[in-house]
Image (cartoon, rainbow, N blue to C red):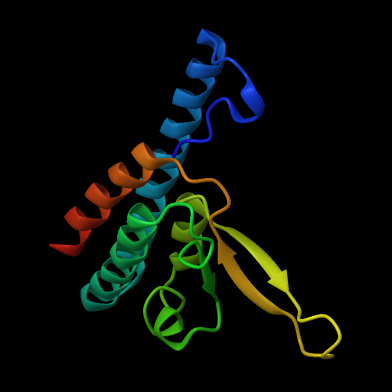
Length: 139
């Protein structure tokens, strides 16, 4: 669900307008990042990245409260081969609302891993992003 009114706040007109503006900025950032991907990568690479992102978004839309589907390891081989390897791939992840986070397993001395984590789920934005990506994947 959209994180509106968390903590029992009442949604005001000002808050609604701010959310709408933020939504427009996110979708514009996604469109801009998509142009970078299309301009700087082979069509097959751009399509593979779009297909992977579509799968991620479908999973999130199916289970928006599940942190597991909203947390993508940056060192995941499939991610690296598709989204992570294209110019503009990181920018698309950020435009979708993912944040880069490092996570180390305390006490193991292991090297921290980087994840792309979607901490806030905006259902309408993700649906709009799906439409943009599906259009790009068909090119």
